[in-house]
Length: 376
Ligand code: AMP
Ligand code: MG
Image 1 (cartoon, protein in one colour):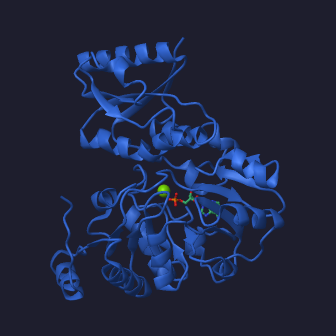
Image 2 (cartoon, rainbow, N blue to C red; image 1 turned 120 degrees about the horizontal axis):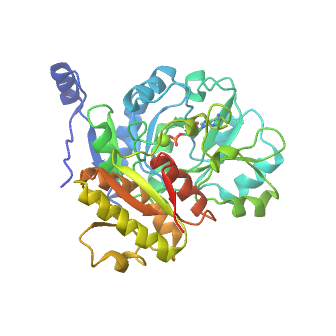
């Protein structure tokens, strides 16, 4: 059962005075009870307008929101997450006209992407307007904007009547949160409120493109795939660090992509090669780790599960190979489960870097600290 501390404001103050830690309101959206939901959004808006922090569901992952125009509020996001201050936040809007409040220039190609993918899991970077503080843009002269499709996200932003700066609602470096419980595990006592809208649909953070100038450049792959983008705007550039490990000489264009990311405490090893060989090697590697006294596991798709069923190695399920979207949706959850089960190591096979597979492998490589074994 999820704990539901529904505290009155007086209690929040009392708790803060006693323990120097705030009480986090946890509110569940009930689609069958619109009056209750309206009250939740009202309360959330009140918190945001006072400079507080509210975690909310989106179709990608949960976001940790603050008033994007209030630098003091935005600083609290960095504190709660332990996020480096040069890592800019995405500004979320709830209708198209709001874009003009943040973006100074909108290129013709950006217009086309907006027409095709908004609302949805695509973040676009524009030259910023002065009203967006440096704290929100990580000191850059550009701003990342997203118009989410998730109804609860839009109702929350609309109730606030403000642009909402929101990174993923996890402790920096940990796998992103795909449920309100993940947010609670990471940020309980550090933020004012969590809105529970169930599991997120895509489970991978938004695709990020820069639309500054005439070109479109992919900075972070996501559920809006390269093919989908090319279909709308023709050729696009791809930041090289998406495909290779970033280092001193190769810095990602999205500052956040250079940090250790998506990492469970558990050591993840990716095994790459032809299917049968990979599965055989995964089983052997796990047996060896177990013989060395490690608590180990294998992360397997439904199609591969049977291969390991006659071993006594812990099996963790990850979606269906026939539907890569289910792998994307379950990836962060399974990485968190590795830690919940106190596994010290886990093995997973490499997926094809096509379509949403590019985003899955981008996250997985970072989660594994680029620990990839190629087998023949
Ligand atoms: P998160 O929401 O936690 O996934 O983080 C937002 C991501 O967007 C990070 O990787 C940031 O570096 C990236 N980002 C936000 N604003 C900009 C910007 N103006 N230019 C480039 N990347 C950005
Ligand atoms: Mg993040």
